[in-house]
Image (cartoon, rainbow, N blue to C red):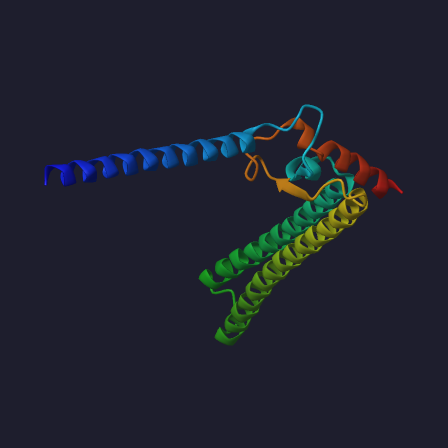
Length: 199
């Protein structure tokens, strides 16, 4: 019985040693593959990816600057028009209030008619405000689509040789937290798009 127990212990010991060797071999193999994955790209070579800083593009692309200027001008014109109409309405309402308090209207029907006219004018002003806001929003969407189409068309030509498999966008370091400068193609894109826009 003692011999049987000893043989079983030896078999278990050998099995444990073999198991340890297999586990160690598996771990070292995994470590070597992860180390090889972490090896940086050789100096002077570049992975087939790049990124574009959209904020810089919008700030420096002539079309985007002009479009933004037009949109701001349209917003200012709309605000001016609304403010002028609002001041006129406010003046007419104050005049109505003064006449009403001093019993200046010849009849109640005349006062009611003037009140309804002013209410209609106020509704028209609110509708105008909504319409102008809608126009500006649609203009902004149209400009965004034009900008997107312009960028897509340029990138298609720019990458016609297939040097990049992926071109990513970055907004104020939202998407890409850290990247080597060699992957930033923003200046090339802005220069190329400005040259193309001038033509």
